[in-house]
Length: 314
Length: 278
Image (cartoon, rainbow over all chains, first blue to last red):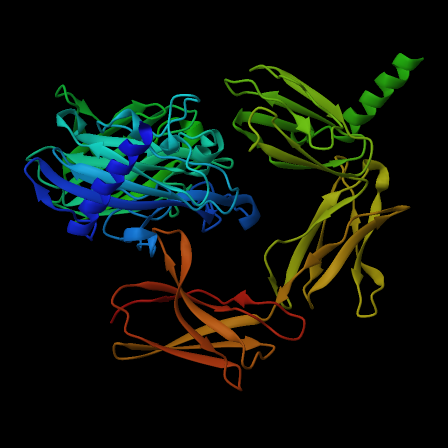
């Protein structure tokens, strides 16, 4: 019974592929079908490339800051080639976080996932927050219940079918939910989803700020300390969208200097708490030129690297 | 009798490290050991304090000690009777690792290359009753010979200045004790000069002793990256010179990095030049 259903799905997926070879997809009555080709790949990752805590002056050696790990990378169709990291989007396809998955309410998103973990040869998966999907696309292992998508073995692939429905607008995490998730999430196997409302305009700048930890460091997008964490750039007048997410074992209090934003209930905010797998986004019409800090206000996290620079040109 | 010996031993440890007792402790402020690496003398006791909000363990990879579950606020001690390196970890959070290096006599030197014909500092730990010890340099014949003497302070620390003549191995020697060998790299003296003609800045880099054919990189300091970034590459010519032309549109902090060197020296960096637009 399960096998014919899976075959039918594959036919549908190939049908869409034939119509829309790029990842841009096609317009349908209900919205576009977007396709992402993503693989879990090994990568040597330096958490502190300049080997310096620039504020406290502590220096490190590469052996203390470098780790071999597995990350999500976006590819061209058929996983033929790795796509570059677009500098125009912070947190686009650098490795940690994984590729930013963008959609609009009404879209169908097909994520073709391949496990190319030649570092540890462990099973991996993708589990998505925010979207609506059928159980087969949940990507999390329940022995005896879940299917192949929950435990994609090295060399294997699986397509997750996701719907951006009315309640999907906003920013959400995705991550490994296979049996190896305890190690792999700590190693950086996670990413962000950004879904626009049906008629919401895209921002001028979008910053993915993913709070987590690696080795002994507290990280933003897998890096620690000013100069290594993303240096965010904007201009006065820009509509800037911050996508703030967290994974790991810790709670964080995200703070941006020189700025406030409106929470959904209308109150003015400059610091917000979030725990593992929580996420939020906010928009600022930029009007405060300067070089500002953004950081987690848990001081022990800030001093272990969870801090970055935000530069606004006049 | 046994108790007296024990008290005597504790007293000795206390006397041996009256002012730097804090250096013999490791704190767990979160999911890390702070400091990650600790140097000790034989006989020292280390105390780990769990200041995190969750349980950790201090477990030697070789099984030589194990705290088992250490609740928040609890502490654990171990005494190190033999020289050697022990790697340990938290059995709950495997990525938390630390290192204890026990020496009869410890020596450490600069991590970065030292420019030739300058002075650098070697420092270390020795039994406090050592008095004066000898720092030795390995010669071209492979044998160690005295290079300097150092007086050991009451807390066991010592430091001594040594001239940088060439890259060399050093060790400290006191009575029957010898430290492990420390390698100190020495670089040529690298110089960067600027000459302005109109809006153009001519830069000339050089090195002494001469390093003809060696690769160099012109680097600019990025304030927002807290790092030196490469803007141009070149090789020294036969006269050990490299030239660059710039039209600076903003004020730049520049230096030349010698990427490799000959004659037993290693690469190094020049003085910093500040170049402003005309």
